Length: 177
Image (cartoon, rainbow, N blue to C red):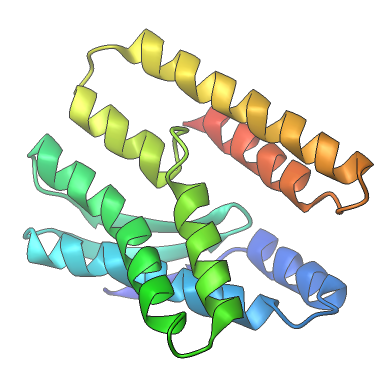
């Protein structure tokens, strides 16, 4: 990998999260995210792809790379991040690192949502290979609505607005994908 790019939005988001993080889970989530991205990197290299840059944005990490032409290889690359997250969960839980296990499991599950540019949505797009685009967009749209509605319900119940904010970020990213 030739370079790591850090966007201003990422720095602003990290500063805001650091200030709001009363329980100290931000470093744990950052470790879980790093392992998740390493899963993608490993399978990109394993499948013969080349990583040119890692770009950290307010909406997450974006790998700029040359991928193999096979839709199955591309889907495997997408699913490698959640697989690494679940592997970290399986390793951390027996060691008593329950917060790390939970953060990694949440990250893996969230990224499996069938909404581009999340891993689950991108894997479906690669496997469909242009077919069923209307159906996949419908599934993604419903997923975003469910995420936003769940976020509003949790916010109203006093559990904070983090899921709603995550839903907004996914909705904005889906609109760009």
